[in-house]
Amino acid sequence: MLKLARRWWKYVTAKLTGSFNERADPKVQLEQAILEAQEQHTRLKEQAANVIAIQKQTELQLNRKLDELEKVTGQARQAVIMADDATKRGDAAKAADYTRAAEAIATKLIGLESEVNDLKARSLQSAQASDQAKAAVAQNASVLQKKLAEKNQLMGQLEQAKMQEQMNKAMASLSETVGADVPTFNEIRDKIEARYAKATGTAELAGESVESHMLEIEQAAQNSEASTRLAEIRAQLGLQPTAVTDAVPEAAPPQGEVSPGA
Image (cartoon, rainbow, N blue to C red; front, side, top):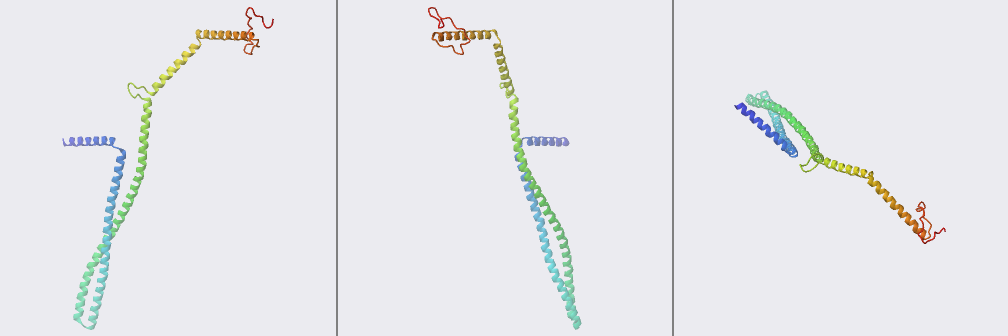
């Protein structure tokens, strides 16, 4: 039962995560990712600063112990010299005092040498850790810089993708049905072309019909009659026929009038 509940929980979590990722704004997610990377870099720098601080502190302690070791070493040498001088003078009491002092100083010297060796080892380790921390910060800074540059590139690609998606929607609306009562662009084009073709075909048929030929004959007769009448008028006025009326036969003069050539 517990195993089934865990599986169900993982399934629900994965489903909710998938739904969230589908609805989330990539621009906001990208900003969140960059902010998280910057915060991680800040934490890394703080950790590196702590490591470097320990290394610096160890160096200071080592330097103090080295100074103290040098001082105590000088004291031990001086005590040995004074004990030797007292022995040469035959002053056994002084020689014993200086010898005990030299031994005490030597004991302190041994302790200081042990501390110095320990601090040297710690200093070496802290120096290595400090170098590693500096390298990690530098490497992470380079990675962060690349992410920032890639962020700008991704933002540009995101804007281009949005523009392309809008263009795709606009192009799709030209060939897809918008609604039940709204025809597509292709359907409207086909309808107009069909209407134009039908009108053109009807006009061609009308031009080849008997009625159209009869209209042409009637129009030609009217034009011929008008030309003949115009020629008669010019003859009555004694005018020469024009080039237009040369081909028209001369009309007979009206009754009671003499022809100009008689």
